Amino acid sequence: MGLHPKGFDLSLDRINRLLDVLGNPHRKLPPVIHVAGTNGKGSVTAFCRALLEAGGYSAHVHTSPHLVNWHERYRIGVKGGRGQLVDDAVFADAVRRVADANAGQHITVFEILTAVTFILFSEHPADAAIIEVGLGGRFDATNIISDPAVSVIMPISLDHQPYLGDRVELIAAEKAGVMKPGFPVVIGHQEYDAALDVLMSTAERLHCPSAVFGQDFMAHEEYGRLVYQDEFGLADLPLPRLPGRHQYANAAAAIRAVKAAGFTVTETMMEKAMSSVEWPGRLQRLSEGRLLSHAPAGAEIWIDGGHNPGAGEVIAEAMANFEERQSRPLFLITGMINTKDPVGYFKAFTGLVEKVFCVPIRGSEAMIDPVILSNAAYDAGLVAEPMLTVGDALEAIKAVLDPEALPPRILVGGSLYLVGDVLADNGTPPK
Image 1: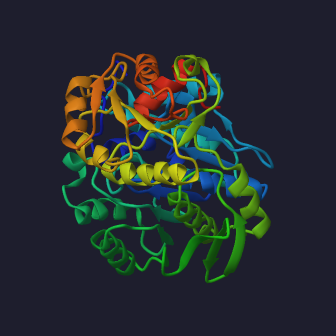
Image 2: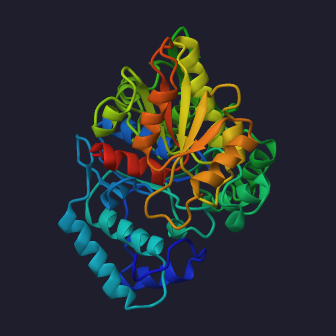
């Protein structure tokens, strides 16, 4: 981090040069499931991994950013078992080799880490590699992959506008850059017709065999079960372990993607995957850890790294569904960075939330000052107050809670970086 600039420098020239020096490890990968989109990338990646592992396949997984430890970005597949986060010595050796190959030339941290991905995944045998795009698609460093088994494009909404454009169709065009001529593409649920039109027209122009949510495959809840259907048939499955109705469409996209990548997917695999899937920091409930001592007795605490208006809407819907099942006063503890739209995020929670407590994000020069963030919550119609730490905010909820009320439901989120801080402070990092 000290040697290389933060952020993104969207171009493939530097990563091409670096990989060439390293012997082009990106050309020696197992079949790649390449995942792009604004929201849902991590969830569909988790479902793909769960499906493959349920079938006894080994799957490497690359995600970003990490929450607590850098190792979380790299999960090394294990035949017939659960993939493991990369060993420290193996990771350090790969970083050193990439740094030596780069020889001090200008490059970003993400490009270095992407080259590490290709080294690790090419040198450890596996049946598949699931690789999540960092930002955008067309010029993302992961898009050096020229022959994916399948490209997956998840829901597209406004985010990273300075890099990708200020209209969903412009962002969709950047995400569509992961499609490769003649290779399959799976298009997940899209809220915006303009985005869907761009994705479908690109797939047609590139002669990509395509499967589109709502047309070629779909999923819905029926009598407490998940019904999945595509051109290959219908499956009656348990609801996904990941909470929220938005996960039904994410699960469906993963099932269709793994099939499109050439793997046999049985109903037994799907059943096991729905029950075993895990994705830390995304509507994850904290049931143990140090921070719970600061919370009101019996409080239900959730963390989620969603940070844009689209994510706010699906998280708010999940909170509303929780409220229908069991009514509790809802409080938000929120921290955000200044590339996001806080008012748009907060508006999704109008009418649901008792109060918002705004907190800083440690070690981030881009964090929004809690006072300014509180004003954004106020502009969205919510009552808000700045606090110094998440622990202080939990204590403050104790103070404002009606003694006659049920124990509260607390959502901590607005940034993956804040979620990382919480998991670190709580002593429960992802494994």
